[in-house]
Length: 461
Ligand SMILES: Cc1cc2nc3c(=O)[nH]c(=O)nc-3n(C[C@H](O)[C@H](O)[C@H](O)COP(=O)(O)OP(=O)(O)OC[C@H]3O[C@@H](n4cnc5c(N)ncnc54)[C@H](O)[C@@H]3O)c2cc1C
Image 1 (cartoon, rainbow, N blue to C red):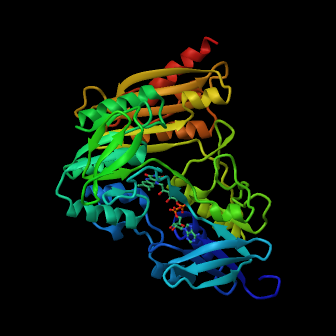
Image 2 (image 1 turned 120 degrees about the horizontal axis):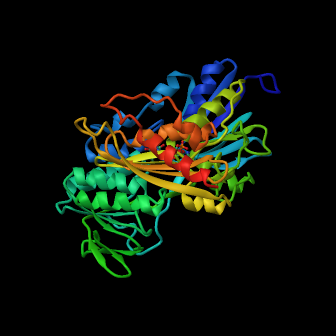
Image 3 (image 1 turned 60 degrees about the vertical axis):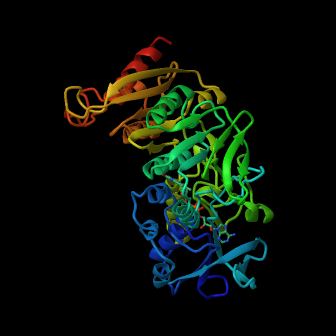
């Protein structure tokens, strides 16, 4: 009950992973007689998986609606008053109310809250350069973006695609377009693709992408998008060259969508994300919570705040927020920086710190890189795998792992994620009782081989 004796009102801004997980969990814990839930979403969809867009575009997933976990109607049947196509334009913290605008009619109104959840997500970075908005240039942030891209692909006769950016979204989109029969060029500002890996591991991804027929252009910043007489994209230009394109995909990262929160005076960190406490409550604000791509997270290995916009965190944040708003107690302690992705049959995974992260926080460490196989060498289908491990000098504490390989490589990183969470040393990891049979791994799992070598190397200090 609120102070006036009526039922409390929870207002949620943002209808995707963080916002609707929070709303759904709060509803599980408190019925409509106790808690009214009003959620605002400015787009057309709720609880959708942007993570699935590359696989939908590439044809692995058949229908757009397969990516929607819960529609607005389904949320409404759970007594959540969901206001679609309605954008929150102001948060009045002192007055405990939000101003919202109907995107179609422009009509505005205020809604008061007892508790507020901010789940506004992230905004894709759009390069400030000529031609960036030309027809044929696409982002892939939302389901609408995915549909617009598919419409363009269906209309376009040419088969040349340029992907700008070689982070995980860029490489996943390169795969999607290869699967659709396009000639794909990836233009990347960094020295190697996948800057979430160390460059030596990124180099393996680079080589494998070339092996798949993808043209990789590294150390190249796109300066403009060139258009033809019809106004459509015809090429992407860097300072040194032009790359002909019938379609261009932008995958150059996102920033936290925190304009509203900043204007309301809520605290943001050095990476531009909202700052929260362990319960995901916005610091210094008893009745306001935030989660997902609009917040910074604590990296448990470096001890520093970081911006890691991933759906896996957004869903957990929402669950924690909903539990707390619903009268329970839950915390989100932080992350170890685990991520996995793939390009065709090449699996790419990382957790913990890269070399440059460890150096930045002043850690002294050793690295080892080993080659092994996904299965016993004699078992059919065994494929090569490279594992890189960082461990702290003297203590031997595990600091990070990166893995590049084929089937069975990517999810092996979870062993290291658990070890990092448990603050294990490389030596302790060597004794882990992992499952073994020839079809699943060599008798010494590749991660354990790396741990054994890392343990030996740090013992020297
Ligand atoms: C192509 C792609 C692939 C991805 N793959 C993976 C993956 O494999 N693994 C992984 O962990 N993550 C992945 N992600 C990231 C993941 O999708 C996001 O981390 C996740 O969607 C974040 O959820 P969120 O609820 O915080 O934000 P969002 O999903 O961005 O949702 C925020 C919502 O808030 C709405 N909104 C914003 N401001 C307002 C306002 N003022 N008023 C009303 N509504 C508002 C927006 O319209 C949006 O619907 C991928 C993302 C993309 C784009």
